[in-house]
Image 1 (tube, rainbow, N blue to C red):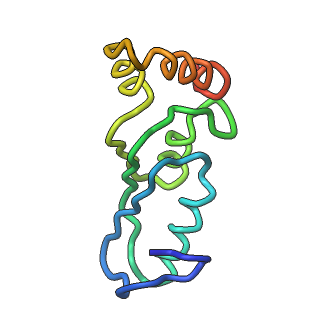
Image 2: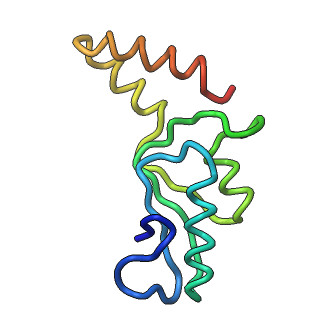
Length: 110
């Protein structure tokens, strides 16, 4: 685990999978990749809990930018489409559905 730019825990060897809750920009992934490489290991991919499908620095999503920049896959457990579908299926969550759609309109990729 990286904490404040320092690796904490067992030494990294071989291929390393990076895990995050979400990716908002490529900054944290880039920092992790550098730490992993500097330790002599190989960053092999990223797994995230939720892909918010939001724009990165340009036309691509933040996740797509990370994939393009580092050449490895980013896999999410769920994405914003999954969350919207869940909210649509539960009428009692309609208030949240509206908020998520507003978020998507403001920050999401086209």
